[in-house]
Image (cartoon, rainbow, N blue to C red; front, side, top):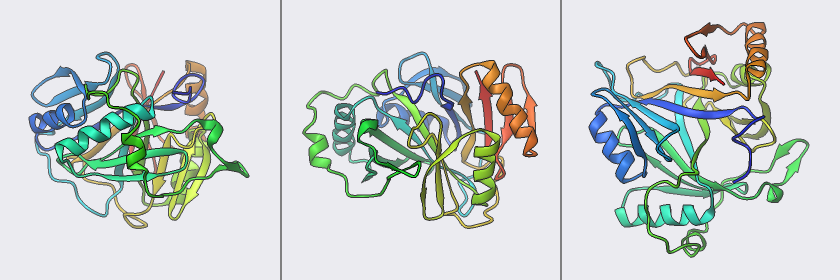
Length: 281
């Protein structure tokens, strides 16, 4: 795995989502996805791949309601596996469990798609080496093609033992109400670069990655934010290399009119569609 999710880049660290039934969801994320549970209470579970670093937190609000359509919020969070062999093991596991899935070759990556029991979208993928990516006019070539599932399955016969310890949160893909406003927030405010465009979507990154964040208006232009107690995204973190880098971004966010609030050990901001972001070092 390359260094796109380390210093000096800014990248997604942890995603926090709301679910209807915590115990049921934890069972899915353990048995189907292969996460480890590092902490659990009646309303909250923190999940990891290595037993230490939180990647995904599940919360069950007291008055939770099902996910609503045609709203902004989570399209999917994306789990990046260290190698194609790891994707092979995971794909065979999904086939053996019979869990429904989709798949695509994006040129830069090979990806599997599934939904959790509440309809929260999940991508599990592996990157092709960045030396194989094609860039033109500062945009990387990406598409949605048929996945070579047989080629992936032939990559490894290893037994599935859950997510490998080198797994990271590869990216997050969000529904927004206004693509232009969201793009301005993520570029001029948070300092990301546009890496690629797709119909009604933009892909943004730091450090020459294909995307750490994607935004789209596929739920409709002007799609409103989901209710606070709805299943879906609660917040996600952006990890900064140091305090200086975070301070620079906070000033940029204020210059574009975004609200930034200091909490105990992180700052909170919201994109124009209400997706909450925690800025951490």
